[in-house]
Every structure is written in structure tokens, then in C-alpha cells.
Length: 202
Image (cartoon, rainbow, N blue to C red; front, side):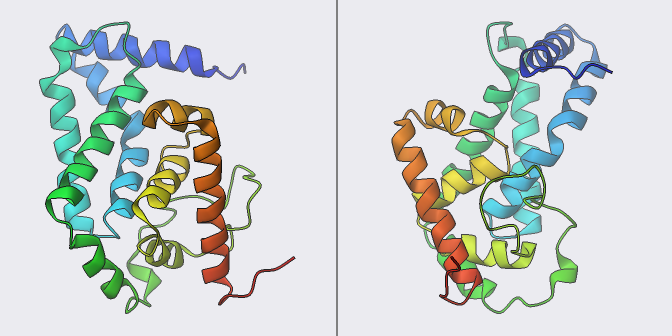
């Protein structure tokens, strides 16, 4: 069976959204099923594992999609549109609540029970990414993300929740590709160091 490329997938996304804007509810259902996991991962890790808040932001995003359906055109990439809505919603919340991540960071150090975390919230154990953070448990990653700077955390969330490559992230954030590479490398180094108790392997 031939695997669809990204262009075909995006055309399908756009077609589904256009059908939904024309009144066919099946289009929305298909888009929701296709993208819900990535959006939830983004909010779950972006809020430090606050399931209730992640759920609220998740619902807000899809309500924004519903409200904006008439403004959607075939010239818009649905995936990029959805990512921008999610990104803006998360960072609006963080800007309005600047102490939120500090509180999460303190609370995260006390979290030891991984059984409460959804299975494979961020599946960094697959897909062959050439970095050595695949040994981190979800609980460790969740905890350590809160210690990253805003810029570093942003890159990691986009990379591992939305599966964006570096060129996509650079375009999404309107920054140089070299800046994305540097921030990602620094973030991975930090996660490696934290996961090994400060001892980096060769």
C-alpha cells in the first residue's frame, strides 16, 4: 500500500475542513480524530502534566476551529493553522499566569508515581530521532521540561509533540534555522545531563 506524502495528507486535511465549513460534520470528526493526540500531548507537557488545564485548553482549541470554520480557505495549511491556535492558546495562558510554571516545577520534583501518566503521552521512544533522550520516562521528561527556559521548552514541545522538523519550527516561529538548531541542541544536552544525574555519556 502506498503511503501518502505530507502534501497529500495536507490536501486531505484542507478538503475535510472545507467540507466541514460547508456543513458536513463528518469532516470535523475526521480532523479531530487525526490531530487530537498531538494537540493533547502539546498541552499536557506544556502545562506540566496538569490534566484538567490541558483538557480545558484542548477544548478551547477545537472550539476555535469550530468558530473559525467559515474563515478557512484552501490556501491555509490546516496543520499549521491548528498548531498556531494551540501554541497561541498555551502561551497566552502562561503569559497571563507567569508563576504557573514555577509552581509546576516545584510540584514536579515531588512526583514519583508514573502510573498516573497517560501511556506514551509523548512517544519519543520511536521514530529513530538521533538523540539520546529516549531513555527518559514520561515522568522524567515531564519534570525536566519545567526546568527549561521558555525558548528551549518551546522548541522541545514543537519538536516532540507536533513532530515538526527544524525547518518547520523555524518557519513557525519566524526565526533562523540556526537558532532552532542551537536551542534544540542545548535543550537535549540539558535533558541528557539531568537524566544522568549530571554525568553525560560519551
